[in-house]
Image 1 (tube, helix red, strand yellow):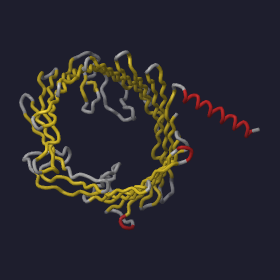
Image 2 (cartoon, rainbow, N blue to C red):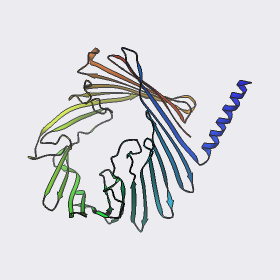
Image 3 (cartoon, rainbow, N blue to C red):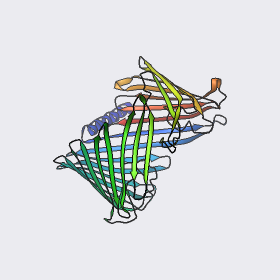
Image 4 (cartoon, rainbow, N blue to C red):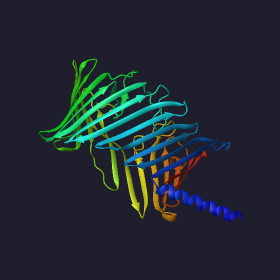
Length: 406
């Protein structure tokens, strides 16, 4: 009787999910739990936890979505979005809340329309007064207030023209509208005019003219990328000239183009008067040579890929994370094995094994640590993930997670 009841409940739940997914609703849910392990005391602690639940509802050409993010401290982000068309207009809106401080974070709405080859766009952003966090739960340090932007762009022959006006707002450099002051006003901040065009043997030159409310004329700049040097095919330059009322700045950024193939990649850097952060030349402008920093060998056999990355300057290229800068983790070699294949019921099976070697460790051959991650697909829309970390002290971490879509 109990078995029949369980089977009936499972059948009803499965049919309910199938009907739910077949309608206008869709979504995804993923979660991951990581445990830290002390190899000496065998004490176990929760090092991280994350869970993201997303639900979409589509109706009449519009998609309404809710994204809830949970962390080790609880519910951290609640995001609502709406995207669709209204006549000839395309509209996108994003409403963000911070559940930790029970506060409203931001409301951002943008719209655009194309008429006779000209694209018009506008955006409005309203910031709350509580703790500001983005959709990933990170503090964004934004000020309260509201801001606007209006723009237009189009082409005339080989030229691309554009203009954007900002009102109590500015572009933060990453294409995101940011509120300028803690005011709720339609106050002019600046206007940017841009034009791109080919010139002589240069494929494209970008020109930008900017005016703002405090200085009037702000700046004028000319820039281009990929300038080739005759007889030096391996060296190109990006160049920019910036003019203000009382100054002119020239920025030249060289780039090495050694090239890659399917098996071997070589990494190199230029020597000389080069800013280590921006990569641009600084006066006196000069390049004295270049240094080989490392190389990578990668090849795939029957679905299994082996990669060896060797660093010649204590920085392992192609890595994620902060291994190159973490004290005690100056790694100079990475062996990686990855594989993917079919799993049960239409799912996929994949695993990655990363093994690092360093100069500051006592393991055999300088072995430092090994990370293992495995994903197992159970059907086409449910995946289980797991992994572990082992270093010279023993087993230090274990994680388990899953993701599903409907």
